[in-house]
Length: 377
Image: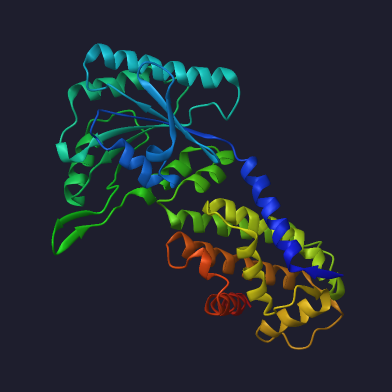
């Protein structure tokens, strides 16, 4: 059985597109007074500069819906919370109506999954009307229990942000979490720049609050917590290996090594979707080519196995003419980890998509794969 690299890359792209299409839509309400930095927060947490480039349209008098094609995320942005008590009550009612509308639809893609209430840390205070609004909202929301997170925006000083967080904590408000965030690097003076932070914590908390079926979507749309993407992707690798190569796996003849490919294609597709990057056929083909260490378009199954076994420390002579479950698991895990490393570096801007087919990048990817094999042997 032969393996065609171009065909495998095409299979990966097809599987990636299928998985993206099947993602649930994540719906978040972002509330807070004008000027607290909601748009900056949205653009910091989510990919595609959603608040800047997304399409916004009013759905009620005080709520605007922001969406973008091919991003499974809807942001509902509130307007006018600073305009007085009557307007605040109207907004609260509109939010509750929107929550009920999603619930009654019985469609997960229309349900509101979380609410962020934003307060400017730099103001160093939470207004009495905000305290009352949160209390009244959570009372009205108690039957549905959509989680509410207070996000402390513009948290330039971590010390002051902690003090402010501790103060709000002392009020015992019925919220799920209070998270200080600095959405943009902030220049204190020429010698010191406060780096953006808080995204990792916010996404980690979101992951704990959301249902299991929404976690793939959360990882796909968020960009502020690369470590969370890596953690999730490693879970994909572990699940793939456990489900496919555990006890009961029938050894695969060397000549039929390509039979393992569909499992590995699905794994790579899931990892790609989690990182939310635009990956084309060329990137996948370059990755596969670098791992196999060949420039040939088509390889025989036996050649693939022979090449991979040379990379496994202490593998020795291949006995029995078949790939065991343990060996398949080892190769698949190393493949997944190497691909995660590539996606992570692309996310962090350490490597560009245009550079992946370069000799240097391909050599580096193969070395990473060899390291992963060695570490797991």
